[in-house]
Image 1: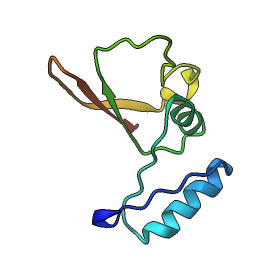
Image 2: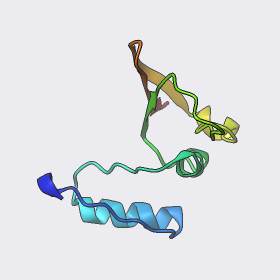
Image 3: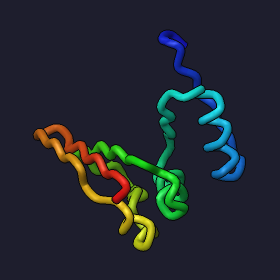
Length: 96
């Protein structure tokens, strides 16, 4: 991909995926992408240092909420930044 970004899709265990990502990044930042199930797994496991949520005021049929089922895991994070406009709200959560 232009700019050197590489995407890998896998269903390996969380620890394995994260270890491979850090090895491939060679000291650079690692960003994980995914839907609500991915977010929930990593938050519950306490493996995220930072979480960026982009929230848009749009309803499209049935949806999964990214922070459902993470009650215990989410307590380890705090809102560090929140920026809103009529089009979207961006919230940055960081580990306490």
